[in-house]
Image (cartoon, rainbow, N blue to C red):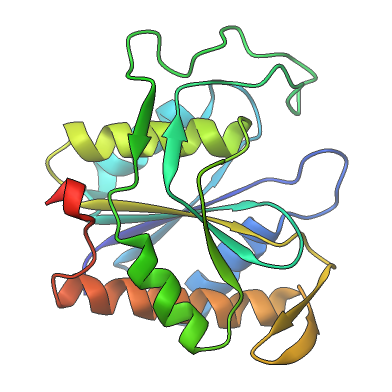
Length: 212
């Protein structure tokens, strides 16, 4: 199995939990594998970069699976990273210092992963998944843009995938049942998407055409 870095976020907007970190924590605890490394990211403008670079430098992951909390009802596979930040307060009640994630960066970066194939396999499991082109402009967008930049520039990182999860406590149709987005469902989803990503990687089918 390849070495994989998995990231999630701390709670934000006054919430008591974040589905992404609940999912990451549950997955890492269930797998108990030294090849799977977890990092919790702060919802603070500019802070993810150093944490991500440090984790990559220390662990040399081949794949990075990053998760954030998004809209109710489905899992959003983010296909496009924009070099932009919304004027939105972070957890320190601060606005971004710049409207760009990277001053000298390109406007946008397409996903390094074949997300249509990932979605197809998720839908076969009756998991509501969609490919999205709008990562939201908040810390999830910043993180996605940074990670895809690292994927292009750092030799160890082969592919990056970012998934927005439904918020904790919301309801959705999951595997043909009305379920609540709780720790049990998030672990089930995480195990499924982890298996899909690692299998596609092993079969050399994970990368998008633009990344090949």
